[in-house]
Length: 383
Image 1: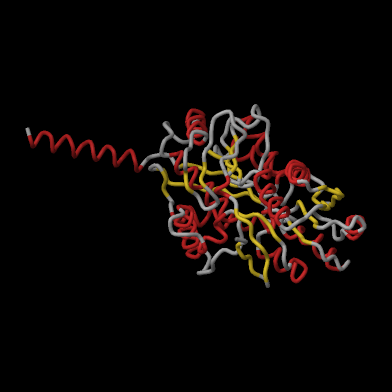
Image 2 (image 1 turned 30 degrees about the horizontal axis):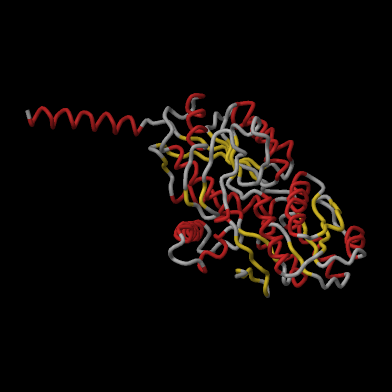
């Protein structure tokens, strides 16, 4: 009887091993802005996901295949890339991209073709449009509200706004209005500019003429430095604030002395070493830093963006462990989506994620926000 059991066990183990050996790869369609105005965000995004895959090349018994496409910072190209990845390459999940307009274009394709999308960029969609999309980025209202709290503590009564003339600019402005009203702060200007513009002198002149106590910019990446450079040129002495879309080395390099004192919201990952050991985000964030260093010649990340795609991969891995079916099928994509939106208390580098079916696609709460300040070229935690 013992021999029979051993023989059956051996046959079963062999069969399991063969099944594992021939298990279909799990394909990730990754879209990022590796060129163009949003490349300062898109390049770190790619570094983050490559670090995650190098650390965990197999998830749920499936080898991971990463297919990377550059959208050149163009939303139309982002949508076209998404369609190619799903229709031609048969990917199981989409991750991307680096700008809000592009991410929204991908979300539309994800919904049409019933393919889960994990966006590292904030995407605000109506519930009916968000069925296949979640984002690991913090919602703008949450982040901007934290900035407004900081303004209120500093005694700010009036604030001028300048932002991109696109969906990100609208999202930032709407979030600012929502938070400043209850805080008793008046928004005295609403100026916009294009991501590829080379000057905002006219817009800043209008803002400065209102004599606001502070200026808040709703932008991201290297083009986000323009308003601060122009404010410095005009000799503006008020407080300056921005979004979490500014935390990257190129922005700091271009902004230089003009961004001294700038306050922005951030996920905890950027100041992980300053977190108490009891905070579970610290452990995951330090693991991310180690994985990033291994794939980037020992350098540590100085941006917040690479950690978003690392979190996207952690979310995918957690969901894949619970999803039933075989990659490469419509049934698996649906199961994967269902597993993603049922994620509970998943600890990442930017926060602790909880999603729900029929929600708005965001999974972050107040644990995902800290305020940091630029001091002599370094981001410092604001107590």
